[in-house]
Figure 1 (cartoon, helix red, strand yellow):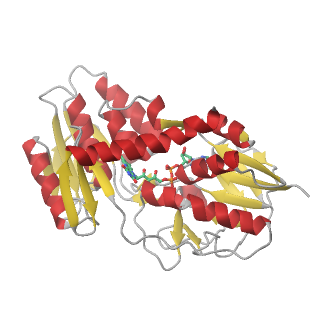
Figure 2 (cartoon, protein in one colour):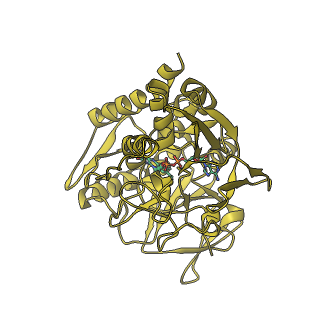
Figure 3 (cartoon, protein in one colour):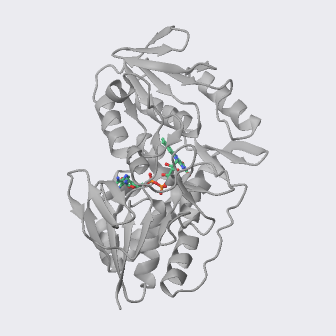
Length: 368
Ligand SMILES: Cc1cc2nc3c(=O)[nH]c(=O)nc-3n(C[C@H](O)[C@H](O)[C@H](O)COP(=O)(O)OP(=O)(O)OC[C@H]3O[C@@H](n4cnc5c(N)ncnc54)[C@H](O)[C@@H]3O)c2cc1C
């Protein structure tokens, strides 16, 4: 009997999963990918693309071609609703996908948290979805005079993106990073924060720490205490939050609204539904939302889908507690952050570049 596996979202985990199916197809299974984009951005190369170091094609995975190599069906669709009882998925146009999946997996990523901040939706450019970020970046690049740019969020994404954008804009464009905590790069060791704070100062980026932006108006951002800062363009790169529509699916959600999954990556109430990457909150673990984990979840997801289809028992994914982060500084150098260790050098950038190019190369090879 042929079963159907539906993958929602072509994030890092599903891209690798499809790559694995291209090499070793799932027996007796029709695989369908529903994705709102044909070209899936690879986060590791995103700041490098903004810094002019990688082309658009170099940092995007061609999902229809990957599906073709994997013998899977590709459907362009922005999923905005799902009912686990009827197993019906709905898209943004209100149409239902009558796919009757036997197994389903979500890998739809996250969006920066800006709910309840007046003006943020209308006047700030979000870091996700990536196509929106790149569109905002391109229109800023096209301006004769970029003026003052505010980046809300001083985590790795905000800092790396700031350095990348600054490297491409004319001298005289001003940057300010607004961050709610007293130090940038939370979740990394103190030395990482020190290295990057010093570098931002050297490059003339202003830091507004311990302050929260509570409103965005055209030309201004407003702080909690009512203070206003002028900003011609605002990029919103704050904490990741889940897509809104998940809250109406009836699936069990974590306190922050992500999909609650067991260490087997199965949702806690529906063993036939899986989730991986940023959208998944693994019970008992508190993992940072990072592309590295989304990549690492591909192998356990593949293994557990295969064992589920065979009716065998599933294995738990045991994530590494420490991961190596390599943060590019837009000058062909990178800061390495691993547990208590950190340093910045050209060899760290060369290493990051090798890892990222190798990651993308495998999708090219799958097509040929
Ligand atoms: C500026 C910036 C830089 C970053 N740099 C790094 C880095 O260098 N290294 C690192 O490890 N992490 C980095 N991150 C974090 C990283 O982007 C995420 O952790 C990672 O992308 C999560 O991968 P994912 O597979 O869960 O989802 P994603 O990569 O976000 O992929 C989700 C996919 O699902 C699709 N999708 C979304 N919603 C729907 C829907 N409703 N219907 C259909 N399709 C949908 C999207 O189009 C997308 O293709 C960065 C983040 C930012 C904001």
